[in-house]
Image 1 (cartoon, rainbow, N blue to C red):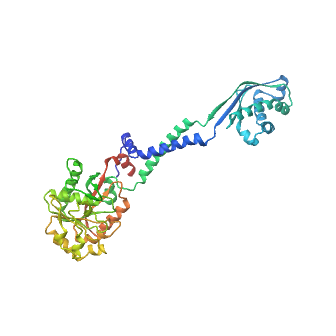
Image 2: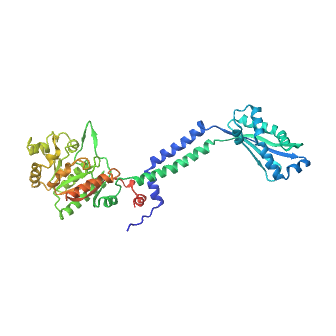
Image 3: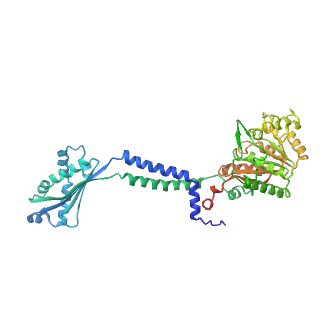
Length: 451
């Protein structure tokens, strides 16, 4: 049974803050478009209006009838084709009778003989001229149509005003519509998001427990063309206490898991590149080394070696795992100690022609068996599983796997594919690591939409 999630105003504001850039860009874009359309594209509209009193002789009333009937008759005559044709001819207008009819509006005020005649046009002078032409032609047309005399039109008021477009109003309307639309787009994007965001996503999609949540951080800095680090730059307790605690928790979970299942030879795996697999391997190795364990960190990613470029060139001279397996170099020449951290590094070495064959070779299994006698933990960094099958080649030689998922980066499909591949090999998965976690990217509103 799914639990209901109570969403507060704070959660909604939290979500809007996360999509702030999108909302601002779309809101301003629509507002600017409306302003530009009102200012430069839409034609101005003017309305010329006249208030009229129409008087008729007593003898005419017997012909026309009641005031209501006269009002309808008057309105019909003023918008009738003959009068409009005469107005077009008199003003030399380049428009059809139908077009002029659509611009002319007449209404009766109550059941009186007072009428409001209005004309809308993009030209202020032409709107007023059309009004004047209609009022000039109206008495004669009425007398001609009704065959009566003594119809008099008295102009009570007349004027022309600008009616649109209202640039300010349209701009604010555009901003409002843009904001509403951007909020809808943001919610739809959130609903369509197929990336892992929370530990609950991992539990639901991968049916795998989360052994650690690693917060987002930027520990590595480029120096020239080589990224260099020192042993304290990754888990510096003063600057990244929250990061240190996450790896201590990972270490504690690993110790507990080792009581249930062997966890000496561990692969750090992930579905795709860019999920922080190598940094997790390095940080976990350093954390275990600080606890007094003898730790060997092996770069088994021949496709895109990461460890060799993370550490200072003084530690790394090119030889590594591939050279040992191909018997191009002795093991002792390829290992180096990483400061006083208690860990040993075995780089990847020269890229072999067939990484898969080399990793599943008897030489690899024999090497790991030999190294397990000298180290408490052997941690292997491997290529992304959804791209290469190298990790699967190593599975028979290792004890367990830690699977790395990066928040808002790892797609559900890629992680599920990789996890299913692991399960098909009956390998023991210690758990998942939610890497790069930013609490600001998730809240109860996200949880409610995903449920």
